[in-house]
Length: 588
Image (cartoon, rainbow, N blue to C red; front, top):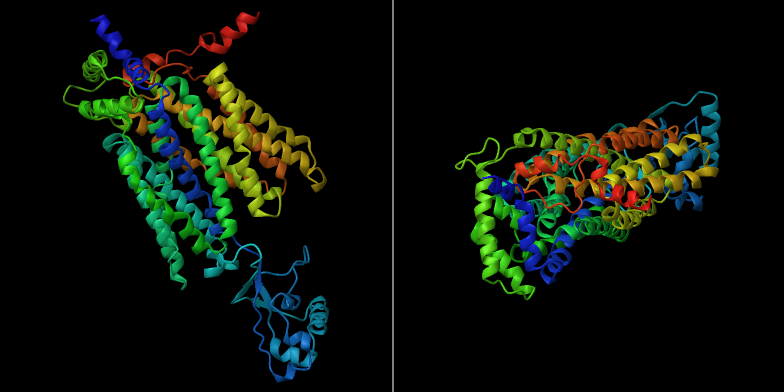
C-alpha cells in the first residue's frame, strides 16, 4: 500500500518519463511551441497592446465660430489662415501661458475680425482687454485637433475632451473590468472543457467583438456601443494569454520549462512591438483595429493543429485521447510506440485513477474540482496565497512602469517601443540564471534589483538635465520586473497541480487584474515628482522579495498532477534544498 501511495504522489514524474521517452525536445515539441503556442502568445500581445493608441487624446483647442466673407478679402493672410493660425485668438492659461483647450472669448469673432482687419491686431486687442479684465470667456462647443501624430482616435471622433475628458479613461477602466470578469470564467472552462477549446473560444470572441467596435457609429451614442463591445472582447484578454501559456507548460518536458517561459516573454514582446509598428503605419483608429484583428481569423486553423493538453486529458480520465496524442507525437519524432511504452502508459492510467480517488474530498464518483480546492490543504493554500501576492505585485509594477513610460519623451510611439524592447534583455537575463540558481533565488534577486533601481532615484533631482539617469534606472527597473514576471509565471505553473492549474492561474490573475489599476494611480499621484512614483514601485518590489522567500523550489521537479503531489512538493522550503546553495557550498 505504501508503494501505491508513493506511485500516486509521483504521478507527474511518471508522466514526464513517458514524455521524455516519446519526444523529449523532439520535432513534435518544437513544432507545437514554435508554430502554434508562441504565435498564439504574440497574437494576444498584438491584439491588446494598441489600445493606448485607440484612446489617445491629441492636442486640441476650440474651433472658432468665424465665417470668411467679402469684408475680409483685403487680407490675404486672413483669407488663407488655418485653424492653427486662429489659436492666437484664444484665451491663455495664466499659469503657463499655453492656449486654453476648453475656453474661447465670448465675442462675435466674425464681426471683430471685420473691425480689426488682421489676426495679429485682434490678438493684441484680446491680450490688452484680458489684462484689463474686460473680456469674458465661454465653453467651447467644437474643437480642432492636431493630426500630426494621430489621424483620428475615439477622442476626435466623439469629442471626448474638456468636460468629457474622463470618458477615454472610463473606457479603459471598463475594459479592464471585462478582463477581471473573464479571467475566472476562462479558468473554469480551461479545467472543464480543455485548454484548446477555451483558447479558441476566447480568441474568436476577442477578434470578432474588437473588430466590430471599429464600426461604432460616429454619432455620440456610438461611444457607448464602442465601450460595450470592448467590455465583451476584454473577457478574452487574460485567457488568450494564460491558456496557451499553461498548455505549453503541460506539453513540454522539465528541462525546457524555463526556456519556454522566456520564449513566451519574447513572443509577447514581439507582438507588442509589432502592434506599435502597425499603429504607426495606420494612424486612424478604426483602420488600425480592423488591420490588427481580422487577420487572426486565420487562427481558426488551430482547431486542427493545436493539441489538447495531455496532462488535462489524464486528469479527465480521457485515456484513449491521451494515447492518441502520445502516438501522434511518437510518430512525428520517429519513435516506436512499442509494447514497453504501452505497458508504461497503462500503469500511468491505473495510478492516475488510484490517485484521483485519494484526493481530499474527492470520491471515485466525484472528480470535479472547484476554486475551493486551492485552499483545501495547508501547502497548496500557502502557495496559492503567495502566487496571488507575487502576481499582483508583478502586474502593479509592470503595468505601472509601462504607464509611466510616456513621461520619458514626447513621442508616444518611441516611448512604447522602448518600454517593450527592454523586455528582450529581461528574457535573456532570466534564461541565463533561472536554471542555474533555481526559481526562488531568481525571483527574489529580480525583485531586489528592480526595487533598488527604483529606490535609487530618490536622491536624484527632478530637473530635465538629469533625466538620462532617471531613464537608465527606469529601464533597469522595467527589465527586472519583467524578469520577475517571467519567473512568477513559471513557478505558478510548476507549483499548481494539473487538476486545478487552470483555476489557480485564473484566480491569481483575477485578483491581480483588479489591483493592476493601482499602478496608473501611483503614477498619477506622483505627477509633480516623478521620482516619487518610482520610489513607491521600489518599495512594493522589496516587499515582494520578502514574500518570495517563502516559496518552494521547483527546479527539476515534475509538474504535480494531483493535490497530494502539490502538498508534498510544497514542503521543500529550506534554502539548503536549492541548487544554488549546494553550488556555493562546493566553492567554499
